[in-house]
Image (cartoon, rainbow over all chains, first blue to last red; front, side, top):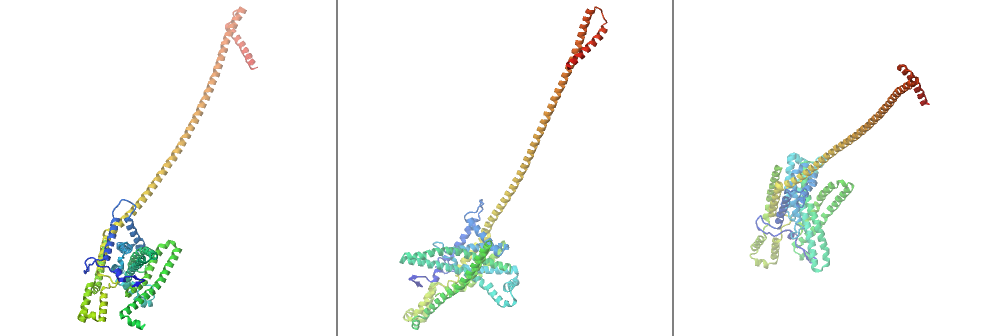
Length: 255
Length: 85
Length: 244
């Protein structure tokens, strides 16, 4: 692909990183894997530091970050979607939120500049995990038949409409949900990375030809970087809140 | 046109067609969600302006609505990536 | 809490197994670049005899080139890679294990402890304030009591002083009256004494004088009565003359 003599790499080359260690085995390590491990380490360090007992009454530094995150997830995710009995899912939702956030935010971290979630691995893993969890929760809290009945035959619909509604619900609840959850996160990150790459390549190429017009894509690059920080937070939040919505929906049907 | 077809190999012609399809497909897929997100956010803003005390709840629901609406555009984007030669 | 964690771990394990089962065919289909090129070369050699034969035939060379490019081209970006699923899933399992075991409970406990402490402190402050208010009202009541007591004492003292003053005054007046009465009595008795003395004196003088004049000795008693009558007359006249 070339535009105005710009060499734009093929899309797949922007996301597939060469293997660093263990080439050829199923345990091959590349940049994406390193980012996942770094996100895990960052979250563990964050919560390990924040959980240390301390004397000061006022939280500061990492403690404040971790506690704001926990507060945020408790107040704007769990309490608004599941309710008080969703508190047992707090560790899961908290680790999900911070893991996704840290793998997303590498998109704008200098010298890394690659969102690990623009690889399908973690989005699909987490989405399938969410699928398993909300189905198990639904079966456990409503019984297998009650769960199927509530999700396939939503109450309050005229009986004739079940001909249309039931297949739609079947597909949307049991098939589309995990994929839409995974693809939402993945595609947002891919699109963000593509945007940043586009403006970065544009700036670099224009800088080589003549200096002044390069300012325009460069300003866009800065604005897009700020926007992508927002998107990273937003996608982590949306993934977490959708998880909570699905779990809450199977826990309390029609509330 | 025919001579152009004769010059290009069958693979390249299909590549061109899929590129056109990908671009058009993504463009069309972005129309509906664009309108939809506009409606969602607009109504959320007017709700927040009318009842600022419930702004938090409206904001959460607005993000949910955006997420569901945006999914369509993202599926278009996925098709775009899959169709790219 | 612990049972939920165990169940969530079971869900994670099931997810991993599901994904591995689903991803292994995809992994089997996508091989390494070198292996793919070798396979293509092998394939072309089988079809055309040797690589030089492929180079000679233009169409065959073009399709061979396409095949080789297909090897270099990365797999579709939407398909998850097995190694990334394994490592990412492992990372998430480790993270979730840490969070469920220690990270989240510690932070949550710290937050709860802090809000509990703040609440306890506020309660204690309220209690202390109520206590202080109670003490203050007690003091105020005591102060008011003391003030009334002081006022009562002052009133009493003033009353006593008044009483004392009146008593003293009354006593003084009584003394004065008594003394005046005594003085009057004294005066009266002195006067009477004086009158008596005078009378005796005058009687003696008069008797003496009369003896001398008359030369006769008269009976003293007769004289006395005579003289008494005279003096009474004189005294009555004198008294009348005082009144005049």
